[in-house]
Length: 416
Ligand SMILES: NC(=O)c1ccc[n+]([C@@H]2O[C@H](COP(=O)([O-])OP(=O)(O)OC[C@H]3O[C@@H](n4cnc5c(N)ncnc54)[C@H](O)[C@@H]3O)[C@@H](O)[C@H]2O)c1
Image (cartoon, rainbow, N blue to C red; front, top):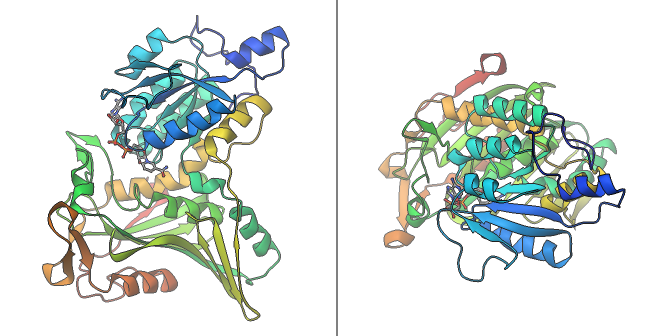
């Protein structure tokens, strides 16, 4: 996917001004001009991108030339180099020669914004989850292919160097044969979290898919990282997805779920996730081997390996996905999180999107801690339930938990 540096897609819209890399290529100059970048969505997670872009602009790697958001940026949050627009359409009609657009907006806006960016012939960094349905994912893949532009998806944990450490230990047989993978997420989200925006906790808004569930948004990295470790990248790498979705909060989507995936090589991956824990712990992916385990705390790039000879722990570095996309443009570096490699994740999202409504967890099994907007639901004994589900590859109902009333909802991939 993507074009070699300095080339322009023959399918790019007529009259598209040359990008800075193309201008360099035409003049025979090295590709040293800072990339011309626009950011769509400047509040929420967009503030993380603004900080990262300021760092990269100071290093001379890019210039933030424009931002778009219906809510104007906070004073001083955007560099003087950047023009401010209320939306991407206005930005595109007023800004020439863009190299890269970063989209960090609510999930339900990803598909139209991403398609507009590709239609303008610009490379794209799209926040996770890529889009809110498999049909939109397929449309986006087609648009990326016909535009010849590169698309990086914002699963930043995939930039962790620990993934190479894991590949090395698997090929060395350190933990024996890999028998299964689990992803465990125990976060805490209060009532204010679900009031911060109108799409929070929604499955859809006015018929438009949102799919803001625990596995598809807050703990999406747990799923994506487990899939990557299992070697499941594209839609062809997954044979089935089962979901069992619950909610303790008064929301439409799920907040406490088991997702059981089987890869096309037969490896089970069980993701047991909640944002209704008593205390937040950093999420982790566990590799269960015949001769040991490896536990990857992906937010901390920390890998703990336990075998008969003891336990060792190492913290790794991480590649930034925006820098990687710039290196892809200028020097052909392989993308760390290319669009097509979100295919396996999108099958999980599609299974969640099409699953029955999440089952409410009975009041007897939910405790509320804190006051008012800061109050958060705690599912009783959820910690042990998540641990068991992941280790034994069982859903909550299969574990016989008293509040787990749903049967797993299964999707085999040919049905998608
Ligand atoms: N990679 C990560 O670790 C990570 C972390 C948090 C959020 N995210 C993702 O970032 C995205 C944004 O999440 P958020 O919580 O910041 O959302 P948000 O609701 O806070 O919205 C972010 C910004 O987008 C703006 N916006 C909304 N519609 C727009 C449009 N059509 N055009 C331009 N701007 C628009 C909003 O005004 C807001 O300023 C989501 O996809 C989310 O999943 C990623």
